[in-house]
Image 1 (cartoon, rainbow over the protein chains, first blue to last red):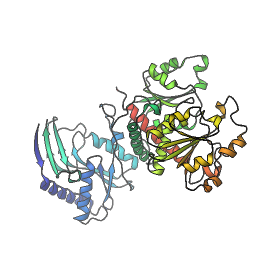
Image 2 (image 1 turned 90 degrees about the horizontal axis):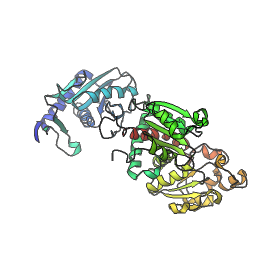
Image 3 (image 1 turned 120 degrees about the horizontal axis):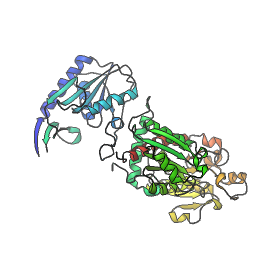
Image 4 (image 1 turned 120 degrees about the vertical axis):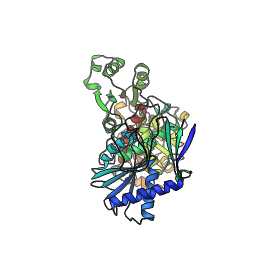
Length: 179
Length: 309
């Protein structure tokens, strides 16, 4: 097994600030915009971005939610394990809002497809954008592309991209692991 | 701990503590989902479920059907009164005929105890017992415990009294198993004629005095007197039963502490509980009904995920 550092904590921090600035460019003061972290792993990136927006760029009305997609996935009963759900916390109205989906790694695009279906249970948003820290290009199964990306990575299918966050006891970092 | 230890839900007797925990955690997610503007998820769109009711049921049948539809399963309903069972068809034949139409899961209520276990040994489908005679009614016990957990924070260490017709009740037996698995203390209370002999062997306290039982418990689960199952007279009159075992507002107010009142329904208002108790803030009867859908969604989802292509 070999592993390679794709991003260290300083680079993650720079990217977070750049993504925050790109969001501000398009969404101004966020009055009609909500951030939705895709459970389980997009939650960390979403929380972090919301924090940067609030504390460093003084955006007051950042609305943040987390969406679980387990019951909307297309691989139910296709693996050996029961798919375990996570919590959904969306305590605001999304009708006519501009939504930014946030996930750590965009790979096949199937999670985002599930998220697009899942979010419909909460109403009809005005538009939905996608922000992802790592974009594994050339591995998409569906026609889904991010609007904001941290870093584009060319990785083969045997390789895995691992994103670590301070919040789960590691240093902020992104690794490429080859089994 | 991410899947059930069983392939069928035949009774609480066959579950372990982790299974109950997993069902509750999954039900938490479904409870959030059924409170959304759109209450449906597509998980089970390739699963077909047959509801076979060989005995009358209103809320259990509705609750199962709603749970199945909210998971996007295809549903077929069957009730014995309009079927070939009356023409002499056996249970296995009836079910195999239905299964040959490519049904993946069977929810069955049957008047004979053990009908679910019997069926699970003979047919190739996941079976959920929705009540078999006076034996078990596992989803009711799960939703009862889930409602206690929701109201009181946990089931462990709580004192739960099951009051009324224990003898004819499948709810009582399933509840005893479920509550004990989760570490609650259980008491049964009712007239001696309606308490099965040797029930103390299950490790439950037995009490014939209602006031003593209510003073002991944190939760009282009031069971209906099942007149339709009574082949002889178990107490002199309904009026006398109510005087001794009916819970009234006055009785609740005379207790040293507040207790929670549950009832699996249907209620005989004025017999086992009065209307002012059933509609009071002590009662969580309608919460039980709402939780029933979430619990059944969880059970169906977890069992369906074990059905392989």
